[in-house]
Image (cartoon, rainbow over all chains, first blue to last red; front, side, top):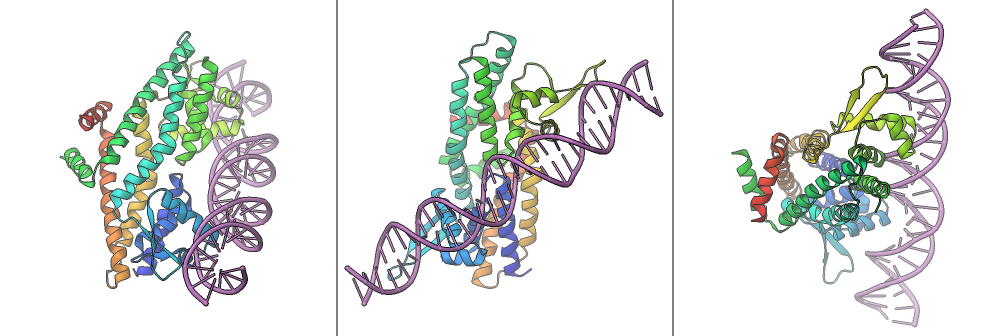
Length: 166
Length: 166
DNA sequence: CGCTGTTTTCAATTTTTTTTGAAAACAAAA
DNA sequence: TTTTGTTTTCAAAAAAAATTGAAAACAGCG
């Protein structure tokens, strides 16, 4: 397989996988393109290579920077901005977890806390309360696990992994 | 807060969270409704309570059964089908992981294997290969971790958790 | 078999999300 | 200050995803 075909396939699949996980396809494709780029590239190059509009390219690069997955590089003597992706996949993975935890798990936890003050007086509300308590307990654990992961280094995961498979 | 309001909020949030994770909102709302229902309910009741069409109700219940999150109950003497959700949240969590791994992680792994045979001859393909190797290695680990989790019981998670926070 | 209550399907419609592209804003250099 | 190359914004358009609802299929019963 040649390099262009490989890149193509990779960008496509990364995009497809992303949509299945609630991330927009183009953002993931821009990410994939930057991941495999040997050098930082400009928003215009992204636009050309993925055949998307300038606005789209810009917005998605900006979103990726919000997520902490892509960084800007300024070159003295040039007005252009160059972008490059974080390439340590453990860091990428961690950033994504942290970002989504903040935006998605935490709001859910707040709702659960809110909703937990329903009193268990009839079979219906009793069942409801039990369920909310269970979910809260698991979500809190997940929350703390993610906090831990956010601080952990790539080695930690390897250690855990080693421990599991032995 | 009263029970109806609590249920309402919970169903709404569960649905919202789901869309952010690439699961359709209605499917998650049906799931939430079944989770907090004290007794098995029919597709018609789901339809009424969520104000959705019969077809939609049916399709989403079916999808939830595919995911192994909801089960059918047949009552002798009645032609109606009743449905109830798996209520052990650890089991729910595990089922979701297993299902998504199969549908999403595994296809990605196959693409990575495919694409890994690009040869590293120029700086461009060298960078590409390095990236693919890293992602493959992390994805494989994730894959095996999920396999492990799929077999683990709820206690295992608690133990891991305990180990992390100490 | 034909009747009846029920579930399932799927083409058409609606809703939501993503993308575009032209205009505005910006900032470095002349 | 004006020019020029560049980035950013956002309303409108397009694309994708979810939902409807009516019709078909199904299954138990007399």
